[in-house]
Length: 225
Image (cartoon, rainbow, N blue to C red):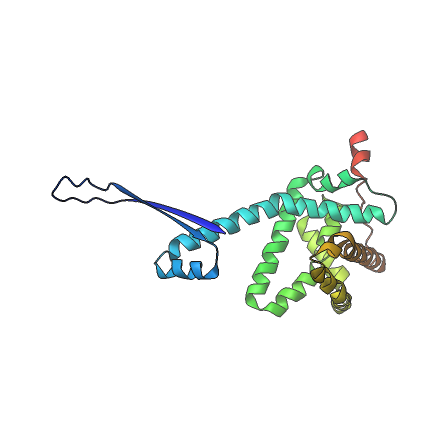
């Protein structure tokens, strides 16, 4: 639901002691698609576009500075889980280790994907698979330079994009189950299962291509030092 308030001055006059109307106030609540169409018909396109632009900017800021580091922390959690029981506060590793490099690299990943998708949908999908390992590489080594992270991900996914695509297709049934259960299955089973599968894919491809990157120790080890 969107609520829009507009204020404007309006003067008027007349005989018989009629008071001037100095200000008008209009409050519009948008609950249905038809309300948005009515807003457009009322020449409020600029207001609507402004709201959309502000919402996109706020969403992108949250994504860059909060969600991306959390994504790196989640990838770190799954990587640790392949060897030992991870601690929940490992999710904060995206904030604790080279935060600026993490948000910068992830921002450029998203920017590249958007630019490729603007050209054509298929190239955007291909690049999405090419950059798929960037979060895992940063989870292992947050100090990894952005250009190197993209280059390593490209090398790891070379000749593996179709296999990765088929792997994703094998989860269609699980994703449909998530929708049918109002995403309850996604929270408790499907998403952890899918994320762990992607983590194992990263480990397999890294071993296959001989990439030996420094693995940042768990957060509690770093703080103890």
